[in-house]
Length: 70
Image (cartoon, rainbow, N blue to C red; front, side, top):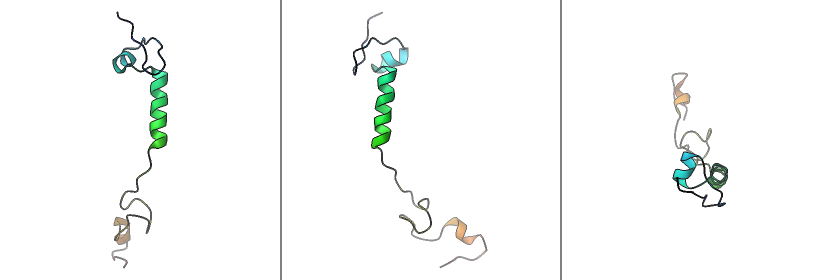
């Protein structure tokens, strides 16, 4: 079996998944941690809270009493 080294740290890879992606499990966890830290949360319409960004009209909860609030 040919020797496969991690692209980030040059350590030999033993795990089949690590060998396939050519990145060791520790380096892969670090890359994922950095990607999550860089990702910014996106406000979805209707889920940003009452009157928050993206809220343009009544929500499904406004009609619980049988009448829509203006």
